[in-house]
View (tube, rainbow, N blue to C red):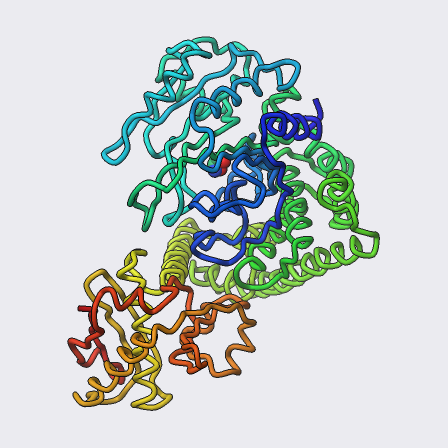
Length: 602
Ligand code: SER
């Protein structure tokens, strides 16, 4: 069965069972942290459906199905093994408060095993896992009861929330899941729980479908209650299902990758599977990202694109393959997926994509040339000692990845000590930890977690900064912020103690604004434009090229605050008023030129 037949069979199967078929949406998420948990790309078929899983009415009804393009870069290092790719398609069916466990499980089983309408897989090669329960949600015995009608009980395994609890992020609909596994070897037979885990680890089993019983709501990573409706969210990776149907043990020896691998094989000086798979996957992902409008840059989505292209280049190098095959690969990707995703893409548009990729490849080639010059110089001056810091600088200042530095050193007969390598790794870990912390801070806006009270304090803190600037002048800038359920702590630039009466006026400013029940509006804006207008912001450099500008304004158009922020905020200021009045409880020195305020709602 071809991948395209599998896709069609899946959609037809669910269409027959009353599901509306949705087209795949863009890979680019809609930038609303409430629904995407700040992921850069759609990472699951359910992601565009979050508002509807939360209770909004979907125009196409309560039963939906789709084949959604997805990009996941969390497992980047694993791409090239048997089952991981950055680009994949997810087949899924959804019930928005309509059917629940019985239908979901029955239909999954039918689609997998039925020979006329489904895939006709051998039932003896299937296994399932169910949620083992935790202190918040009980063991899923209901799912077990239903599964027992299809599969012997000893082939049903219990797993905890690490595997069988699904959520799109800390603030998301969530629920226990049941997963279906297929025996890739054909001879595993009955397995004890321990043997099952081992077989999974050794990739003898492959997870092919996940049914999530999405009935809960998570905030800040914790279950905070039930959703207004009980939903079903399922996802089956088309690549994995195709591998199973085409009788291979990996997703790459399928019609979803072979046309690309064949081109690579033909041109490689020294072929190996792993590098060839990386090239095929990454070029495919790049084409899809560019097609959905991602522009190469040093931040956000554009940086992901840059990174995968650089990795693709390294793999091309490593199998001695000229980058002139890029054009062939891009054409091949477009032809493979033409009917579905590139119907109207013409030669001229393909040429633009090729140019984008080629230009980025040229950049990395230039970087490597610079690297060659640097290592040549080192060779000529044998007194130079290569330290970890030196290697890290090459990476950060010259963009030369460590892997390439190592290769060049070898080429020039220069030793890199283990100590230098270890030191470089250490520096990298520290750097990554810092930037991750930065990214998390940016998303959370210094929020401890996301609760209604913390949102309220967060929005009130924006008003407070506006009030401080009004009283003390435009040199007042945010230096830091940390918000918990109890209080907002806010650091800002100002050289001396803020007089008591000024603090009272700032409080008044905040409370007056809240009393107007003004609205909080959010707008996406090009960073440069925001910077040049009257938007207040600090840490501009930490933000992506497109930023969120939050404006608090009342009905008559008075603006109380206009600030750059990663959210989340209240929608209306009445959501603040329910927690009481805004009060500054403390003002003190934080460090030279920086003051610290603590404020509460009470
Ligand atoms: N959202 C679940 C997953 O991605 C099921 O679709 O696995």
